[in-house]
Amino acid sequence: MEKENLKYQSYLSINEEVKHALENNIPVVALESTIISHGMPYPKNVETAKSCEKIIRDNGCVPATIAIINGKIKVGLTDDELDYLGKMGPKVIKTSRRDIPYIVSLNKDGATTVSATMIIANLAGIKIFATGGIGGVHRNAHITMDISCDLEELGKTNVCVVCAGAKSILDLGKTLEYLETKGVLVIGYKTKTLPAFYTSHSPFECDVRIDNPGEISKLLKTKWDLGLNGGVLVTNPIPKEFEMDEALINEKIDEAVKEAEDKHIVGKEITPFLLAKIVKETNGESLESNIKLVQNNCLLASLIAKEYYKD
Ligand code: PSU
Ligand code: MN
Image 1: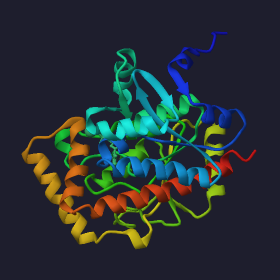
Image 2: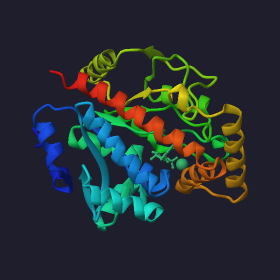
Image 3: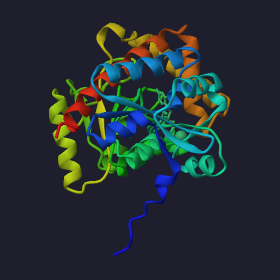
């Protein structure tokens, strides 16, 4: 029989806390780093990253924020590394699946998106990952073909991603269709309605509603026991008290999408451009909602992880 390829291990730098947890069946929750570098401005980005780690610890799990620093794939960051990524902001390279070998082999710094974080979490043996929003099918994808590789990753990598739905910078209907094609179940946590990031609802429906983290954990085990490779998307609505006014946020999103079109912003630049524009145009109100929903996702991911690692 061919020897299993374990070469990847030499590229991974798993910190002591995470290593100890993985070896002792203590639940671990992965976190991405593009949200720090490209998703939020400094210093709120670093404060949020640290508060997310605290929520995960307070709920009996170990956080593993993932990034690539000087070519080393880090699973679990120090506070200094979080500060560094936060201060560097968009100067750090936004790293998705395609970018990983470039960043690693040439000793660069990379902030990992949902796709890259899923890959690395899976290599490290972490099954549950909390974020804010995933990438998806962009609104004018029928012209630009802009479809986030996050969706492809969800189609093949065995990690459960907890998010607050997708924002309407994307075409939510096409995003759901794409996920269906890739065999990715979209779970609504305590809701059948697909949450739309800044608001708890959208005109679309999740595939199933599940109200209990234990049932989500059981579903994950069943899927992977059956050899049905790929991710599961858990969508967790933003708590009502932190929701934005739907008309206001949609107006700002429409304006931002129009400006990106006019400026011919394409490829990996477009999502960070839209996120920053929306924060600016809502005078930071959207940033506050964003922080609250990410924290809420860290809590749910911890509850699922605790069930998953129970026995
Ligand atoms: N959506 C957000 N905040 C984010 C992102 C998306 O609300 O920070 C980031 C995530 O890292 C996601 C990436 O994986 O953007 C998707 O980028 P793209 O659309 O270029 O695939
Ligand atoms: Mn894209």
